[in-house]
Length: 93
View 1 (cartoon, one colour):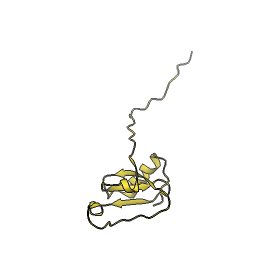
View 2 (cartoon, helix red, strand yellow; view 1 turned 60 degrees about the horizontal axis):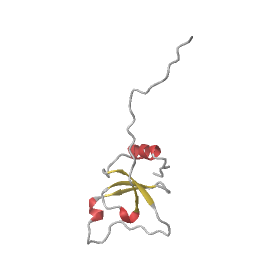
View 3 (cartoon, rainbow, N blue to C red; view 1 turned 120 degrees about the vertical axis):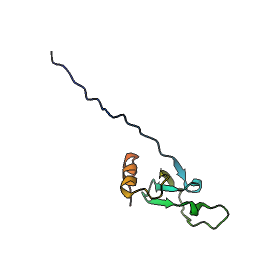
C-alpha cells in the first residue's frame, strides 16, 4: 500500500479583514482604496482637522465604499497593490 502524503503549509496564514468605510466615516489618517474604482487615497492628519475647511472633498451621486489599507500614508504602491489583490479589489494606481 502506497503512503499518501499531504502538503501542509509550514507558515500559518494571518489574514486580517480590512475595515470598510464610507467617505464620511473616514476620520483617521491613512491609505484608503475605493473599492469600486480602485483609486488610492492618501489622507494625512492635516486633511482631517475638525473645524477647518476640508482639504479633501469628494462629490459623487453614488455612495463610495473604501478599505483602509494602512495607517501609513507613505505605504509603498507595491504594498498597497498587494493588499488590494488579497482583498479582491482591482487597483487603479
